[in-house]
Length: 190
Image (tube, rainbow, N blue to C red; front, side, top):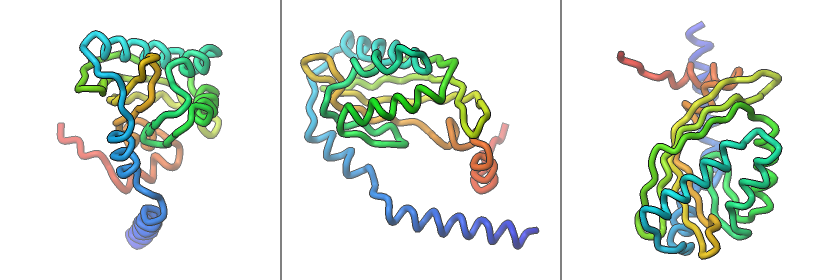
């Protein structure tokens, strides 16, 4: 059994490293977008307003009104990296939202804090939702921070989400979660 576990771990590690070589890093895309996409300079009230609108729209995720509400937040040309996917055009983002909307329910998004630096708002949020995958529903929760820049029309032109998909998603998925947890277990010392 130990040899089988070692073989499986080695195989997964090799496949993971191989995949890492073929998938481009978002780091350069983020750095380029951050440097080249300039939003309006913000104050505290604007940062809080961005956070409130963002949270209000995503609180409708999983309902018929979500796609329209979320769509009104974004400009046609943009940079969005939500940790799992990246978009440069609103139409592609909306397709992504339509797919998300069909797989989630019981969404609750809370604004923890909103701050800013120059043209970036930093929106700290907590999200809980039920996610349908492989015919089962899983309750999921995660914390994250979204760096957001807006244009003069108050539309999002830049968004970089920072959250931990390992805790918020991967560990909760059937089969994948078991493998992921087996390879990289949490070290809870409490």
